[in-house]
Image (cartoon, rainbow, N blue to C red; front, side, top):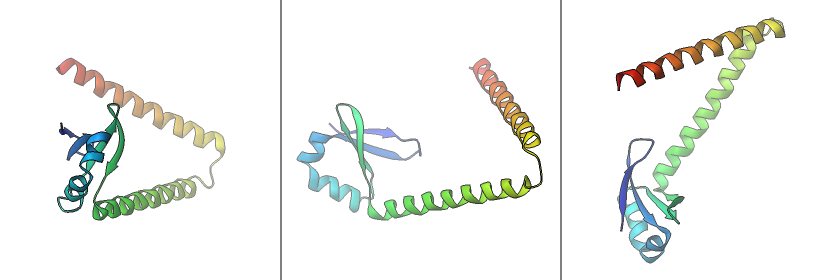
Length: 116
């Protein structure tokens, strides 16, 4: 009983129970390594682990590190841009930006609801 599902990254992910994974471990490893197919292992119907090819795992680690570095760059840019501003002014600008973004997202959700 092997199922397929669309994951949040839009790639097909094979699913199997922990028992199936245990009973078919050699096949699981072959599908992951040679087929470069990620497999989600579930226990009691809930995701428990994902087995991925070492190459894909390496790409994931690189992506994760690049994302972390970009976050630090953005933080540094924000700190530099606000270096000579007082706390109250920065708080006011951030609050206004957050409120504007929330209004835009709310309007978009309402538009999507009305079109369905």
